[in-house]
Image (cartoon, rainbow, N blue to C red; front, side, top):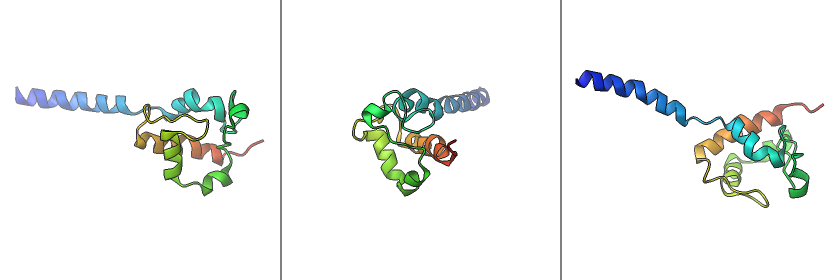
Length: 109
């Protein structure tokens, strides 16, 4: 019986861990693109009105410290709300590396 329960735990554990991994690009599209734009340009629906930062500006992003970006995401800054209730600190760091940094690397036409 003990072997069977250990096997059951091993089967359930990877499924629960994978359920915890969030698609942060989808989070960006749902929560951030309204102001920052789908391409990070700051030209989202509310971007001009609220002063959405151009996250696709590689020079600007290169001057930013990751800790400051993470704090802005979690606590908010200016008109931007904080997302500390929706994201963990680790998820905010992943958002910077998986959603923001790739946008800054793209060439604009």
